[in-house]
Length: 65
Image (tube, rainbow, N blue to C red; front, top):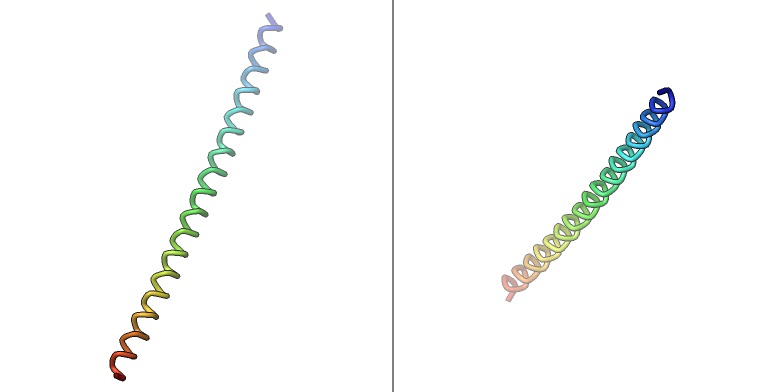
């Protein structure tokens, strides 16, 4: 009977370890997704700033003509 108690306890510990590993993996996965999205948004913002700057320059050039 005591052997069963030890086996059940060991299984419970292993299950907890697996759950913790899964949670850590999910945290890393979500962190990576957030970092990727931030980088994408930063690039989009930079591209928009460049387009705006070029549009202003072209507008100023047209005014001077």
